[in-house]
Length: 209
Image (cartoon, rainbow, N blue to C red; front, side):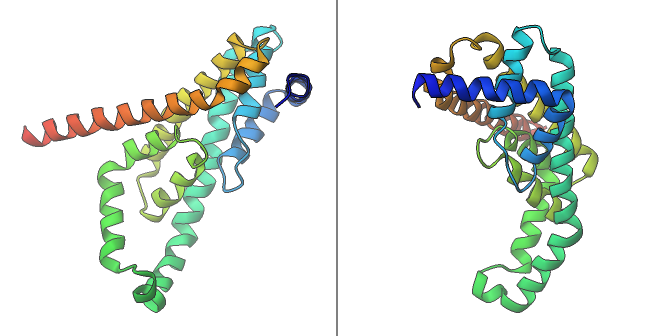
């Protein structure tokens, strides 16, 4: 993207976030976590720039973003839990053999989320593009809702901090942000992979004890 167009876009987003304030960040992140994803980068990086300029408070932005994410994730979770499972059960009964879905496979998915839902939910918040989708299988499998909220908050808190930090540090280096945004995704995937490996190692050690 040309530097002047990028600057205009970024400045427009900064003005929009500034006008909407903390409520706008909350609503934006709520939408980002539903099935209608709005990229969190376009919300939180400009917010980080406003923090750097002293026009917004980091802690308040952070809370607005995390609580907005939790609410959006809960909408997906509860929808999947209350309505989605019924639809899946009907599909398994009527079309399971065509879709290669069986009750046994559904039970395996349920068992997986009962055992590993926490780490899956945490890691899911760090996966670009598909972040909002992880709430749906958690709802299907009726994962413990309190654990779902806690691990969603932990993952969302980490992701929010990364984006705000980028906006805060590089707010006047828009070309750098544009050129290196893919590295952000790589870093988040590395963090997610590291968390998964640590979890697997600890889980295996716990089993041996």
